Length: 295
Image 1 (cartoon, rainbow, N blue to C red):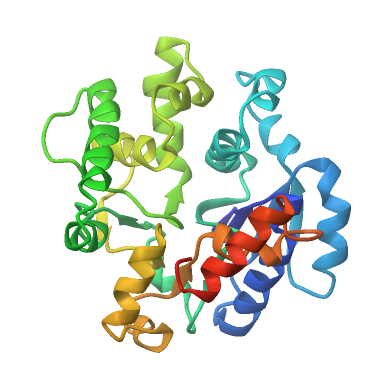
Image 2 (tube, one colour):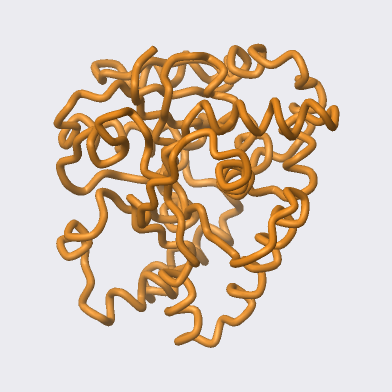
């Protein structure tokens, strides 16, 4: 079992974005950390075609789900992609490929050289992203986006209540956290199984896999908590990006604090496979908003 791998769960619509991610990994991966990509079985041939020549191991989502008999694949297939992908990503540990994995999104890219030591210590314990979300709250306050703060705290309270923890509302993201199989295993064995629940049931309670992982770590202490700020700069909203741009923060400056950047795929619909999705009117509207700097 490897100490760390890079893992991305994707779909055919994002195959061009995964190619861009693979290119950034090839450029900056100083320790040659293995890179795994999963997609539906029906999409694997397309991914193999686009990723030819890249050091990527492809596996099917179905093979990951099959590792957990408690999951109903029919019920899973009926869920929206935004929910089903959380379940697939959170079950990757069962493949026993690695003790820890950096869970990447298709629309992220690395922007500077990185090494394994950024994500796990010399004993193989991962650095856990945990803070109070102020990286997002500060520009939200500046823009008067109070619902952003209210929604995040409400989501946190849902999982805290389910896990029986009182206290501060923590943020365990945003995207691209490092996850340890021992934490997922503790959540499964000590929380889900006694209640006859699967992780699919937990997502129905609160659809945020990062919170379930983080709260399980705090409750069961399967590993030491080594706090870390986010590894990637996540732009949830276009106004966040404009906020940084007006402050003179560009990609070059971000390399001092982050190893990569995540942009919303909705801002880059021209990268959709096989072509930009939506009606002609919506495509023209997006292009106009891009020209005006609104997305």
